Length: 292
Image 1 (tube, rainbow, N blue to C red):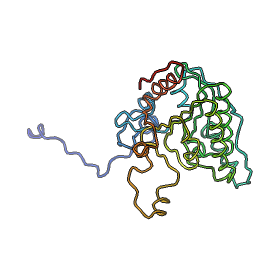
Image 2 (image 1 turned 120 degrees about the vertical axis):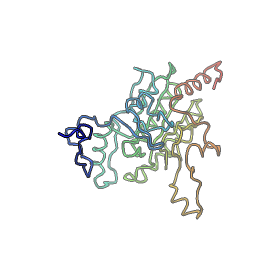
Image 3 (image 1 turned 180 degrees about the vertical axis):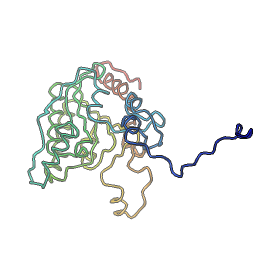
Image 4 (image 1 turned 135 degrees about the vertical axis):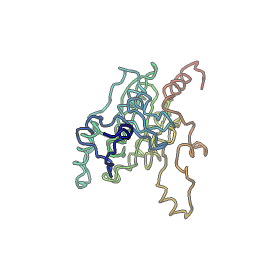
């Protein structure tokens, strides 16, 4: 070996393409360990995101919550008692494959319907709560959803406690036709009766709250709140633009747009939700004072 060879780096053949990881290597990284924020595009550990109530640690984007996650986040531990779990949708119009789709959603979401209702407590304050879940038929409002919400309102009236609803819906459920649309009037009448009896109604709109839900019980609270960035509206942007033949603002139908135009009382971060709602529950007790 020549002396110069001792100081010369051996030449290796360069690979033209990057190696593709084998299936064995891929399996070493657990699926779902990281989550990418759709807003700021940053990547974070899923465990950290869940610890932060599914609010992005970088930009504050609010990811969608399931009804069970919402119960665990908002309701005092061990205080929740579900109501009317047995109520489920039928197929009154004999819509093709509707029952099969419902069964698939029940298995996927582990829910019987697109809303969970029950009795619980928030920092010791007894309430009746309804929590809509977009993972079941996109939170669409069918006759079972309307019935469960109506019965929850009536239970709040019977117990003389506040009624709180978290909305998340794509609107009326088309497979049930007019029966679905009837739920707008049905729930609204129940809220009016409850309000006339002195009941407190708190509506919290989450992403998305659209269609017949936004045009009925979601907007009929004594307090109407929303989470940051939530889509809230009746008809879709494209439909409205084609009807009025005008270009709508970029933030149209967002919670921030609605607050600016007086259609919301406040936007509340999920991280502050329990404290803010507790404050409202306290001021509606005899001798209560606001400390917002």
